[in-house]
Image (tube, rainbow, N blue to C red; front, side, top):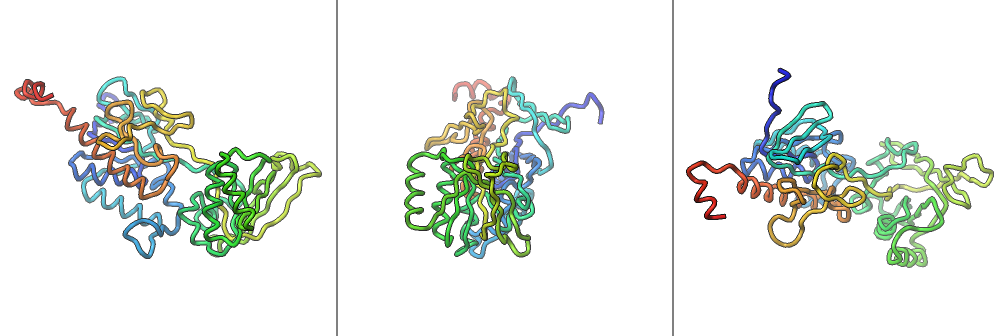
Length: 349
């Protein structure tokens, strides 16, 4: 490639190849917007960690997360979407079109951008976690809880998400063990009160000042149990050599991590796109068109980069469709008019 070669110019770039990004690609390709989908370091997003998706409409017998993503990718390609590996490191919104810099050093020019790079669930890094992710370890109770009916389950966390997931799992579990590394919860009183109702009913057991230390099992056989650390002053993993630190095993069949998500939006820092303190995008919302617009005209948000609450495949897909429709409207509005049509375009504006 010549050093002076101009960057590739695309009408629409979609950052992320999860459900939101691929749904956006399907709609955008059908609208002849020639979308380029950049897969990033986690092609397919979080859904690929789910071995069986039972709540996605149209699959009454369930479908594997990876298979669902692959089908959507094939569908997008069949309509003309271009899908390739690429990790965006920076977006320059100081002019139009936008300039995207990838971690490979490559630059792209885009007339519009749909941000659908998702959010990464935080994990603990304990032994067994990676090997058993999707085989008894999960970051989504509503996705996977029903697969472990009548098992004892562990939920790790002390915030609203952990309380909500523990409460939800009482529908399926013989008992839920809520593991929190400190004495005090950071959840809202509402969720603590709801959890306490389940504790009083014998459905939940709270283990404070306790941390998950190891997960036992195999992908073939699932989880056999976990090892826990406890210390009366909390954060026991930092006090392993303290004589007051105890380690013990617990027989459970599933582990749910509810310690938060990190939206993959750091590449938008320095742009005019508004984000909250944790990196979730602010979009227009509302009931009319343009719900996925960010504060920067031409940049749209969809899926888990926007949604810190629902975080479901079907809601991500819906937002991806909205973003593609909003981007199509933007591109049509901002296309350069032919010279003879400029006056008429101005009169109609």
